[in-house]
Length: 326
Ligand code: UDP
Image (tube, rainbow, N blue to C red):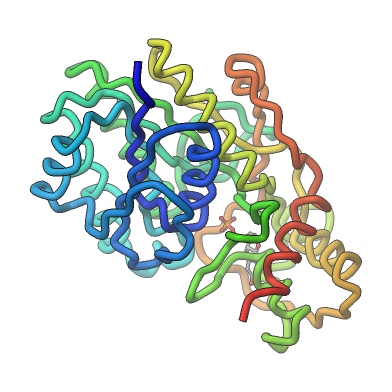
């Protein structure tokens, strides 16, 4: 058998580019499709690059007929909770319609293995913490609702057409590849850890804390931060499982430990040695108080073992990356 050929949609983005690097290192044949709306061409460190959009059916047909694709990994999405509350149409169009278009083209071309970037935002405010995959889904924002709609879509496509998928519900992706070659690079940054580190570098006057009156020990939101390289390794396991003929499944990807916004800022102060001024502001719309994974299922069933389980390692890798960004 030749090399396994994977199409990575959104492979120029933050998580996608780490995935492409891991796939290439693991010996896969990789094609990246990205429209570069938020990704960067330089972040794609190998394989074949195709510049284009996942809604372009002709282009997808061409990619799928150029060489046989064994599986598709789909990272391309708008991913900002706060933005999705303000622009739901854009979010549903890109995240739901875009995936519908991709899946339609896959099925038309006989491709039935799909790995989907889902999110902890499908759960909404949790009733129990840590959150297992069986927890009810009641998303608080259009971003989570759109991702949940895709999960339903691919489940229906499994029943109707035999699409086999793995839906991976990421908690908070953070950190950067150990090589220092790629990291989190958003033109308009909104994520906590990069913003705190940019403040440490003096590129921002202060970090805003969105809400200090949540029902959490210090009043700020709790999140479960997971290293981007660990996310990529979980995808490799999910891919092997699909290649071996497993049934479709849904897995949480997190470290099962929550850190508050204040704890993250304090740890960044320790690691960078910088004072990092802060300012308390209003809550951000769409933010649940607590999102912490029960990730026992993926550990048991796929043997996932994160390498960067503690937040210190995650922040250190991000700090190495941010210090070298212009
Ligand atoms: N957050 C914050 N200030 C910021 C950015 C984020 O207080 O400038 C908080 C946000 O309200 C959430 C947590 O940090 O509770 C993580 O937010 P992020 O945007 O990094 O990820 P999300 O949880 O939205 O996926």
